[in-house]
Length: 438
Image (cartoon, one colour):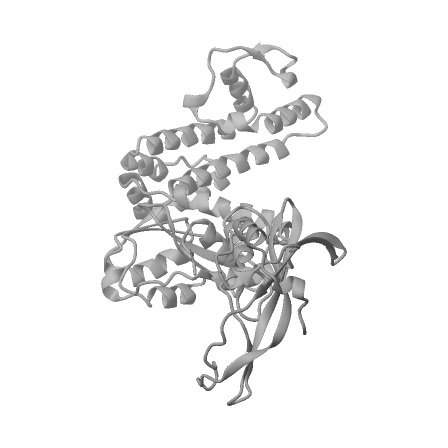
């Protein structure tokens, strides 16, 4: 393709101004006087910069002989960063070369755009920077007027996956699971974090025992022996794998899950007490509504109850009552609920004081008249007695890891889900600065 004389003629002032504006530092690219135009591309008005790329014929890239001559031009449309929200293109005429020895032809090259690519490196880098933010890939594509597949290619090629050193594992580990994507092998994904720094160590697409065992056995026995503490929820299978792969590790149950076990047990009994009330009795109907509306009051710790301030409660005929008076009435509806409530508060008090002896003494001496469902849920904690004692002895908890799980949910929600686990994992690692830009 021939190039008009106007395009070949370099204008020093225009060339300097456009290079400064576009941040082009390649001296082989030049711009003529009338290099800036407005054109319609793909149905949209766009800024178009027209220039040429040429230099002295190099050695042949195929045979290496110094027998290369100029051989016409090849025009290419290179998409750049939008300017003032308007799509911007560089209409670049690249010099073609011909080798007289082997008849191989090739085009001039520049750092500004990769070979056989029509998107500038600056635009790719801007997409890579946006991938670190809480924004969907579709929104990034719309922002830069590229396809979603282009954003995916930048995600795959611009970021280097972190390599795991088989000789290193964090001394204190936090482990948990979260809902993954449809292409995951298991129903839930598995996340590992460093308890000291709070940083994510790795994310796996399966939480099943044989997968976890195979993953941790990639690390040397010396590295696994250095792990001294593992915090988890009350998933029994995790404890089996942990004891196998980390011989020196103490296991702790996350304190939140212990409180959750007690709270759910009392809440189920409250619902059971509500359902036992006769619907034909008007007073029972009122008690039902009160137990339903003020459920938070029943579950609240005694230390956080208000014993002094009076306020109106809608279901108590707008009387001025304290929160403790409302609680007394709710517990009077069902004597068994009051009995379970007293034990619940005693267990919470012992747990908050980190008095594990008193905590398990209370569990071991539960009365026979206690509600069967509540009693079963509380005595279940005996199964994890050692791990709960460790949780009260040592300062580690899954609080930092729950924050990471919340971040993953936010990223998934903003993106309206991910098709592949690979992209979800990479977005999370990028957001946590665990993947470097290549």
